[in-house]
Image (tube, rainbow, N blue to C red; front, top):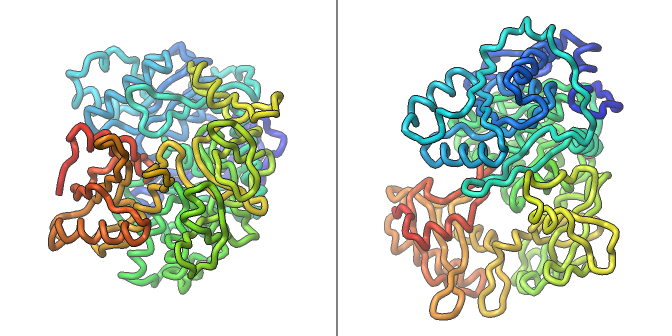
Amino acid sequence: MTADLTARTLVEALRTHSGKRPGTTAYTFLADGEDPEESLTYEELDEAARARAVALESAGVAGGNAVMLYGPGLEFVKAFAGSLYAGTAGAPLKVPQHRAGVDALLSVVQDTGSSVVLTDTRIRDEILSRYADVPGLADLTWLTTDTVDTTAAEQWVEPHIEPEHVAFLQYTSGSTGRPKGVMVSHRNFCAQTMEAREVWGESDDDVVVSWLPIFHDMGLMYGVVMPMVLGMPSYLMSPQAFVRRPRRWLEAITRYRGTLSAGPNFSYDMCSRVAEAEGTDGLDLSSWRVALCGAEPVRRLSMERFAEAHAQAGFDHRTLAPAYGMAENTLKISATRHDCHYRTLWVSAAALGEGRAEPLAPDAHGAVAVVGNGPALSGTIVRIVDPVTHRALEDGEVGEIWVQGTSVAQGYWRRPAENRATFEARITGVYSKKFLRTGDLGFLHEGEVFPTGRWKDLIILDGRNLYPQDIEYTVEKSHPALHAASAAAFSVERDGREQLVVLVETNPQVIASRVDLGARVRAAVGEGHDVTPAEVCVVARRTLHMTTSGKIQRRACKQSYLDGSLTYA
């Protein structure tokens, strides 16, 4: 790969590639996940960006904020680059598919303080037609970037953009009523990219293949930003194309000799099921150098199953690279290096609930696997801190993960109180250094980060700490009709004490009896965790609340349970 290590902003990086390698293909979009539909060279992208920047200047949002609504395709890449060239902080959102999505859009518009929405003609017309009765929607200024005349590029005057300039607003997953936009600067993006390159290693032949949603931090960073800074080709496909036929992801890696690609647990699980049912004939994954897995938390069996199912297709299990991160740190906080195999630590579940990582043999009673997510990136400091006393903890002690470094974002847009609490935390006895509080629990072991779960999701029953994802994993293994991310565990207060509730999502046509399924779940949880659920609710498919990256939104699931809005199977 050819990277300009001196670039201080994304604009400098793209302008440099356009000047040095104008005819080199930068991005390619695969229609239906297979055939190239459109490609952009660096020169073409630079021209498109300049033209769109001029349009943003004319609309009065240069140097301000704008919401971005785009479906899969390269128009988003052009518009994103154009917003950078105009000094505009774009806030990409998922295109609304229902009324709740429109409400979320209007909430974010209000939060940004800008009524300008960047989109394409088709999406604008569809939204205004389907939701014409929604108050306030027609009052927005809709700027369709696909109609911009490229000849306007000649009118562009490069603005003065410093590395600290906010390049992007990442609205956190599930934000609706009170959205929070993470302010990510050019410096954050460039620092994150260079730190990631140290983890990836260097290769002149690197190629990115991504199906991840472009409005999500992982999809934006891996599919768009990192290729833009490092100057490597990126092949993009829609998430829908992947979900409809997961093998398309692997076929694209085979066809275009992809070396870098990423996904959460469920994407590897889906591919494993397909490989076990259909085989891997026609796949060649030997070019894949770094298969990043980012999830909450990363599951050992998901990775092992994928590696085993695709070994005959040339997939090297050492390629798997668990990583830990969040939007508030631009993306990654820690990651497994390309030249190191990921580590699994077996610890006592009972001790883990008491705040200690006590190693056990894998076959010991009560042993649970915790996957290492690698050491902190080179420009990042990780500390484990007691979330209540703010006291620094020792290796092997479980606490909240606190982070400091050049990838830490500038805070939430217009949220001063939350910024002080989240981005300006101080460890007791260390007064001069500010840390980002992640809200995640974990521990350090031999310099590696081992996340264990969300602090606010922790279930406390009779003084015992239980991690919901461990219970959910036990539930998913209890019946062949269940799949990954098909359960949600949380506690509710009844008669003055906390009790465990488990939601199980399945198709009623594939289970013999809801009573039988509930009994299996109770037995499995009782045996595995020494606690019996007070209630097991069997709900219909697509009932559980999930983020765009496939994470269970337990608090939203709990609210639906409490307000009676669940759809039962």
